[in-house]
Length: 158
Image (cartoon, rainbow, N blue to C red; front, top):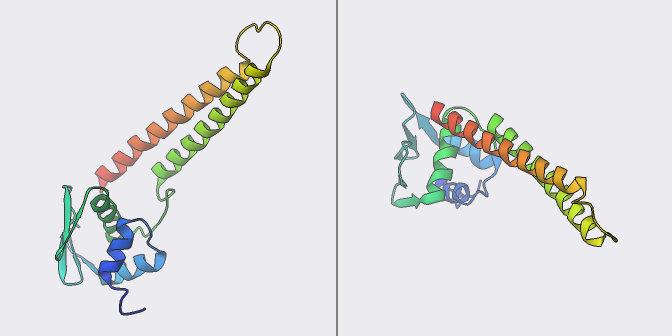
C-alpha cells in the first residue's frame, strides 16, 4: 500500500462513499475495539461512536451525512460486519425490493398514460394498466418505507 494511502484518506473515501473492500480490511486491522463498542481507537485517535452531529478524529471534524457514513461503517467494522452496498442487511434487501416494485409500477403507469393519450374515440375511463401501475408503485413505496423502519430497528440494536 502506498504511504499516502493513510487512515485519513480512507476516512475521506468512506465519507464520500467511494471506499473499497481493501479500505475496510485496512480499517479493520488498524481499529481497536474495547468494551461496549461506543469508543474505538483508530490509529492514535479515539473515536466516539455515540450519535451526535459531528465525528472528531484527530484534527478533522466530519459533519452531517459524512459523519453518519463514517459512524455507520466504523460500527459495522467494529461489530465484524464488513459488508458493503445497499444489500448489507435485511433492511437493504427490503428497500431495494420496494424500489424495484415501485419502478415497475411507475413504468406500467406511464405506459397506461401513453396508451390513454393515443387512444381514439370516446374513452370509457382510464385503461386498467394505468390504475394497476399506480397501485403497484404505491405498494413499492410502502415496502420501501417498511425497509426504512427495519433499518432504524437494526441501527437501534447496535
